[in-house]
Image 1 (cartoon, rainbow, N blue to C red):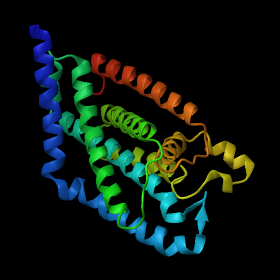
Image 2: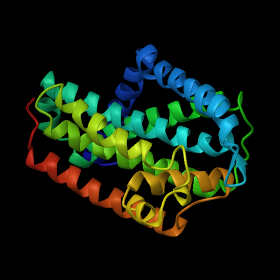
Image 3: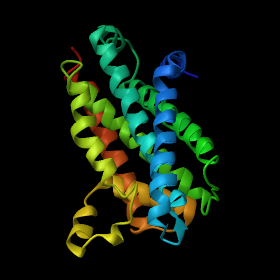
Length: 259
């Protein structure tokens, strides 16, 4: 192994280890709150409101919303981990030392993204385990389930990186999650099927990327979906590639690397 490869491998392992250690060390802030929030969703929407709604898509309402809630936890935590961690590095000026080191921008980006993906998956597993206390889950298509959850976590980790690059203060890292991410998630078919909407709003809903991720994941778990799975996965692959190139270019240019 060449010196360059060895350097980048050590750097990648170090960044990923630091990211994982970071969110595990403060687990009462990173892992516990989303678990409690999802349990409240299960109780309020699944049990209490779900009894009044009845079946949806051939499943009980609880079974129908569980895949969406799992995906929602993956989205918010993968995004939140990268945006807070990278902006923290900017604020402390430690990112400047990493930028002038012989470490490749690809290594830096992959390290932060892997940290976000691992936190998103960790919370997703916790929420999945908790959901088993409320309903039964049978994976319909394991391959689709794994591909969709990995692509979704990667996409939102990359988006969190972009947010962190352009953020100037701590308020800036909360604007996108509050005013963009949350509405897209709640309108992304987590709690309902878009087939319940009028035709015009069904068409409008198709412009929401979260809808495609939630429905693809629901297909992997339950075998039902409101959208084309092939189209959704193709969109996610393209979005991952475009966002990756954008993030690497931002790192190479050094834009926004000072808080």
